[in-house]
Length: 433
Image (cartoon, rainbow, N blue to C red):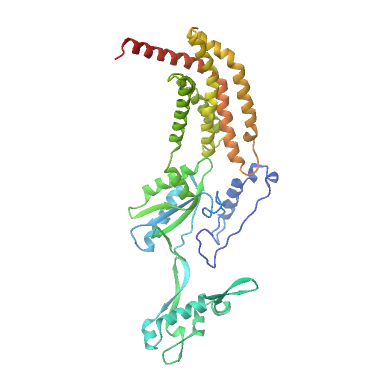
């Protein structure tokens, strides 16, 4: 399933979990079950087995976590790639706590039976070389002849020897090729067979011989931290002839990260809020009074994530963008009234204190109504519950900080910003140049 290659010594099973309502204990959640199953499977000595989650988005990749590809970009032999894959796996598994469940589909020493055609004997027997290969393929491996329609369905016509006649290399003697004189020549007289060890298949990625490595982030680490750890291990342990790339969901994540960064998104969000406020109140200083309370909301959001031991993922970042507007809303309720009183001639500090007293009740009413509305996200259950919990945690933690801490700081920032703007305004009047 992971490599896309059919063979006779591997299998996979789809395991369906019970409904969420029957798996309430943390030990019965998917991640905990995966760790428990893998712990049991690692003790199996007669084979190699591991469990993994399906991809986050069906159809993109074959498994959850990351899919890392090591590439031999120098075009060397198989032993070179095998040596570096083993070296990389040991370095990544032992030294990086961000990584968990590392495994690879690269198997360089699979027991095989090798069949070599003796070209000299083929010429002596006056047999076409293509007939030899075609006969071996048809009887020992199978070949598609054509399709036909019957009973409203399309059927395949395949030619292949029965299983009992193609299980051993010695069975080649049962199959014959016809030479130019019309005689029948058994395949075992013009071929040599014997055991060997080699790769079951050769993976090619970007036209390079490659090895696929699957795994996931360890508990407490994000997928971005896991991929950074992989790249650091590669830089520290791999020679210049090796390269790397990504597959499936990991490839999409890397492409997405090369676009607009989260820092740019937050910066643009703050800039747009600033410009809208500046246009609405026709002032370049008043938006600073509003937005200086946003970092407090951000602090509350990150602190709550840390307390609940949750990741700073894309859902958390969506909540942070939402907090910019919600925290600005609380500040606007105070700053707008303080600005109106100040423009009427009331002292600056008195204007700020009066606005804080007057707007305290509306701020608490709207803030706690919003927080209580987010409680279902805080304690969400069922499929996709983690994403909802992260979003609820960020929003509730940020709004609590903005409501309980920032409302005491907003009047102070309004006074400081207005005094600074007054100083610059007075200087411009005295020195127009």
